[in-house]
Amino acid sequence: MNWELNDFIKVKDVGPRDGLQMEKNFIPTEEKIKLINALSKTGVHGIQVTSLVHPKAVPQLADAEIVMKNIERQASVKYSVLVPNERGAERAVPLQADEWELMHSVTESHSRSNANKSVDESLKEHERVVKIARENNVTVQGGMATALGCPFEGKVPFERVLYTAEAYYSMGIRHIGVADTIGCADPKLVYTTMKRLIDKFPDVEFSLHLHNTRGMALANVLAGINAGVLYFDASIGGLGGCPYAPGATGNVATEDLVHMLDLMNLQSGVDLDQLLTIAKDVERLVGHKLESTIHRAGPSYQIHHAPAAQEKLAK
Amino acid sequence: MNWELNDFIKVKDVGPRDGLQMEKNFIPTEEKIKLINALSKTGVHGIQVTSLVHPKAVPQLADAEIVMKNIERQASVKYSVLVPNERGAERAVPLQADEWELMHSVTESHSRSNANKSVDESLKEHERVVKIARENNVTVQGGMATALGCPFEGKVPFERVLYTAEAYYSMGIRHIGVADTIGCADPKLVYTTMKRLIDKFPDVEFSLHLHNTRGMALANVLAGINAGVLYFDASIGGLGGCPYAPGATGNVATEDLVHMLDLMNLQSGVDLDQLLTIAKDVERLVGHKLESTIHRAGPSYQIHHAPAAQEKLAK
Image (cartoon, rainbow over all chains, first blue to last red; front, side, top):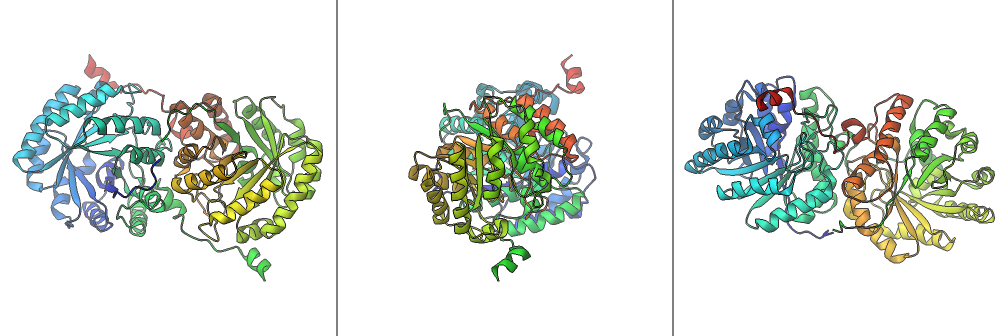
């Protein structure tokens, strides 16, 4: 295990899109903007701002344009939007995001269920989106949902992952996000998958999108780092969830990730205290308990006071 | 990272003692016995049955003798009891536990707060307990609380850990449990601490007692395994907690641990399905939500049915 890593770890907060998308109550547009502006100052490398999905499909993100136009951008932060299809690409062009994110399921059943398209149909559509991006000088991140497990098919053969990665590569994409969509991946799977991908595509930057559904998110981060991954998605407060596993937690919390990296002396440039302040506001905003462990328990470096009994004893 | 480990991983369930001790309502003695009997059949290596602490200090475990005398023991399972002092040792002798567990804080402030003794006073008392154990042919496990972080002192110098380990070693103890008492340890700390201990005491079996307070329990298991640790405490349902961190989770859940080991093809001999059945009973028994993620979300191998929409599409 390599503990003396000198590389910088990039963190993208996907809370504003992937997190809020799971919230039942509409979050007011000005609150979304406030949240993104606050996250912009924490030191995160990127923020997944919103999605240009059809407003009927995801009413929570119907304000995509207003949000993108009104956030205060920091030069150090990459602002990305999810672009699900050509129509979304047309909407995205005037918004001048730093990056468009494609989301694509590597398994047929999930692709059909989630995008109403076969894997090849979805990749064809993405090709057209990439063309529009290129014409507008926008970077594209290819996303691979269900790459580490599918809710319908279970274990996913690496060949399926490779198939999509190769398709993305041939489109000229050099940043690919690998997602544990339902939070079923274990560290060994994460390590072997990422190692094979990195070996096969040395000029591609791979990032990991991990869920804490089964308590393994931070173990998977560790496995990912050991395989050479230096870029992780996370969500403020642990916002987000999985529609197929009721009561299950969602994205790994940004504060949990940064807390562990801090303890291990791995540099992310993200300020934990700021994240914890934002998480408090987020909890009020969504009106339910957050899954973030650091929000609940406080950081490890908090020293508690010895109880009164001990102070008495000491005298 | 070593993923092709062939060694067997031992699991000790500490739920009946360390877990139930945190429950406010008294758990009926017959229910404790039922729980231990059920755990005995899951394949766990050991069960921490109870503690011979003063009944006034921990009323929940006032039935220690009745529990120990009435459980149905399996030959394959090591039944251990916590022996806090000489008085406890005298009570423990007739109970014929397979192992006595000592609990000792490696930091002065925690030792005084928890045991009302200095570190050296506590070790002296343990020496007398070990003598009684030896006279009665009982194996002793030395426990090191706060070895990976102290609620009052924060980071713990390795010298403090070494001091207690050496004291235990010179008492003839060859199994030492290292505890992350407040769930503040990170994987790097776990790895470096365990590696140094194993290198220094090659003939000692070290086990790890990890809490999931800050979401790092399974990452720490991974780090421990990589350092050469093959023995882990865990608690059914994730029972247990930390009095210093309200709202924080406690012990890593046995089902979460076994689930991850299963996925990684590491053999523990523990049956996950049985654990999940027991966890359901435990939830009813304690009357509150369990922290176990697998109890909440189900194992990774559960394949969900494609939603109706997709079935329609397929036609």
